[in-house]
Length: 420
Image 1: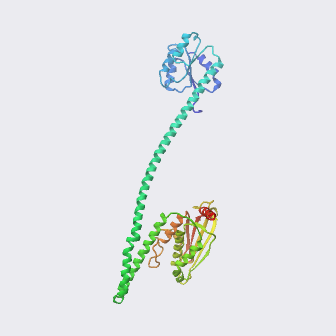
Image 2: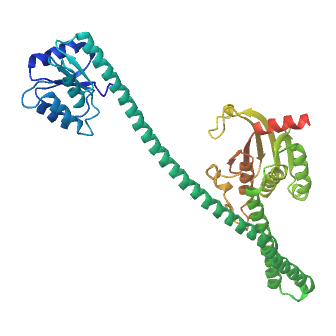
Image 3: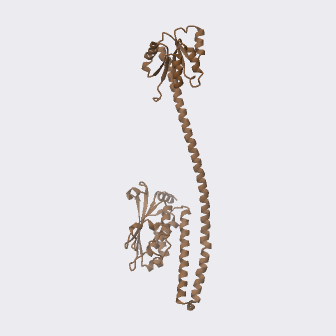
């Protein structure tokens, strides 16, 4: 309310009366505007209607107080401003009635009582302040309602956009399901036939084929084999996005033992050893995490150095996020840090992000086979566990993959598992 001073309009044709009113009300903090006639008061009120009260003398030349009050009351913007008449002659009922009829709310007979004048002015100025506060509240409410309306409209627009996106996503998922069906059945069926008939031709017509013919048929078999691997990897990559996240308390050592059995031939061929240093079970999606470890192991075996036995080290530890000083991790969250280290050919440090991209290869296919999807699948699986994965490597000295899985989900599920 400090922005809106309490203004009082003083109307009297005698300067000494105007000064007397200001002296009486001087210590109340009011702002005074003077008018020396009824016409002068109307001129002021046409420019400024924001007065708390009008103190008006009745007897003035040209236009008396009654006439001025009647004209003021005819204005919609001014009729709410209270008028108190000040006069020495308002001593009859008819005169008083005329004063009220012209629009006054009160009257005072001169000589004025200072205390009564202060009290009456205080009543109307307090009423003005309350009305002003109410008006401000109404303006604030109106502005707030406008903001709420605008926000509701924006929310409705966003909801509509979300609904459209959901429909589009539903359509895309249907297309993905169709693609999955085609990939797993329609595309693989002709590949199987090509492989089967090519194998029969090589077996039955081997002696009748030239060296060049045999080479071409072998290349057909290799190409169809790569195509089947690519289709299977694409299917695995797409399924990591849609699979339900059903966590279970799992023993990582058991998963590692299963991988040793699954990849036993490659492990023997590379004379590889897998060493583990694991600390306790964690809550994971077993099928996906098994695929993650299998992909990392296959990747390590594929990039083993010639004439150097492959050594793979898998370690886990429990650690708080703040101890790791990694921006993407929450400081107050416990994590399982799994490190997967090999002594293979490694890679240059500038490729530590590139290797996780779909179809990203650091080497040509004729040197190292593969579809370029294996590590992309690994990253997707880690993200499905609400974790992050980082890689570091040095050319000729191997690679290390660091995986961080939050353990709040693990602790909760482990507790529930133990209570069962």
